[in-house]
Each structure stands twice: as structure tokens, then as C-alpha cells.
Image (tube, rainbow, N blue to C red; front, side, top):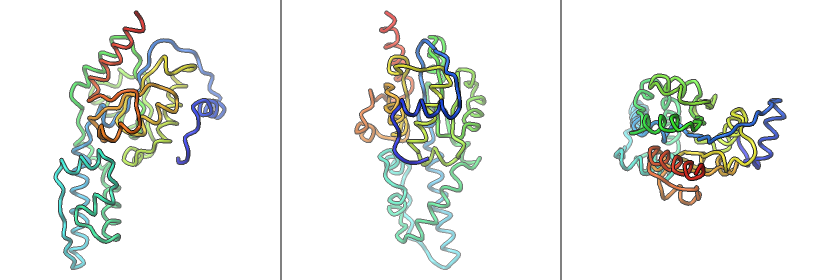
Length: 269
């Protein structure tokens, strides 16, 4: 799904016309939350994928009698580059791959293995996530997951952590590469679908928040005029998300939930 993201009203009407969905009204506050970054720490998986991709590329050329001058980045170096959205091609070049053919082998290998089960096992729950999600639940704030992770995969992980029941809806991609590629327009369409199926309409800026860590989350929320909270615990740095002008920038999901709950109490008062 590519192209310019349409205006929020057009997206709503387009989806309704395509599905014939009759949208019930809903009251209360809804928090739309991303998965990778705010809830799940993917840094170890992405770094391990990078390491294995380089090793496999080196082995491929070694079998052909060519020794590559590999320069492995530290995890700190690698993750800082990912957070600043340095292109994978540049990461490959800084790691010693100088020819386009070498870079192509590396990028292809990374795409092949990033979602393998052995690497997915390296994903971990971010600190404080259980407390944060349960706080929203106890406050009567509806929680909806909108992720570019494969929907079945996200649901299974939440079930394994005993958190799936805290979500009123789980909306994800049918493409296991969407999260790694971070398609902003795809994320916007998922958010539209989630908002409609959850019965939200009218001024979403008064009834919902969007919490995420990437440009896809921020742009999706902005397209629907939903206040956005950008987190710096994920795959984008504060420096990067600042240029997108989210409603606010916070360090992690705990801080974001505390902010939402405080604002909710102020409005109710």
C-alpha cells in the first residue's frame, strides 16, 4: 500500500463504502497503541539479525574465494543508527560492504531471517508495560492495538504474556515485512479501520490518543487528527521524532499512560 495518505474524512467514508459497516457511537476515552517499541523491545532481534546477515554475506563470498573487510558495529552504534533512521544501505556500507552486489546479498538475507522464530524469541516486554496497560484497564480507558506486526503474531505474543484480554481490539498487518519496512500509509489505513470498528466517529481528538514510536504512528494519528505521543524507547530517537511534531514526546509507555490518565482526569473534572 503506497501513495499519499488521504484526508481522514475521505478514509472514513472510503472504508465504510467498501465494507458497508454501520458504525455505532461510542463514548469514553480510547488509546490506540503500537506494539513494537512501546510494548515490545525489538532491539536485540534487530541487532542479531544484522549480525547474522553480515555473517551469512561474509560466508557467501568466502565460499567464492573473496574475503570481505567486515567491520561489525556495536549494538549501541547499530541501534543509534536505526533510531536516527539511517538507511540499511548505509549501515551495510559502514559495516564494510562496499559493492552494491554485496549490499544486495546482505539486505536480502536480513529480510529473509528477521521474522524467523529463533530471532523472534529475542523480543522482550518493555519495562513497566504490564503496570501501564492494567492501569488503563482499571481506569475504564479502552485500549486498542494497531500494529504493523502480523496480527496473528501480535495476538499470540500478547496471549503468552497474559495481556491480550486487556485490549478491546487487535489490528495488525497480513504482511510479515510491514513492521520492518514501517509503511506509514498502511498504518493509517489500519488506524481508520480500528477507529470505525471500535465505534469511534466525530472529533477523535476529543476521545482518543495514539501512542507509538515511529513516523508511521505519528503520521497515522495526525491524519485522523488524534493527539499523538511519540516514545523514545523504540526504534526512533527524540531527535528524529521531534521533526514530525507529535503532541508530546515521552520516554516510555509508563510515562505515556500516566500522561493520558492525568489528562483524562482533568477533562472529567
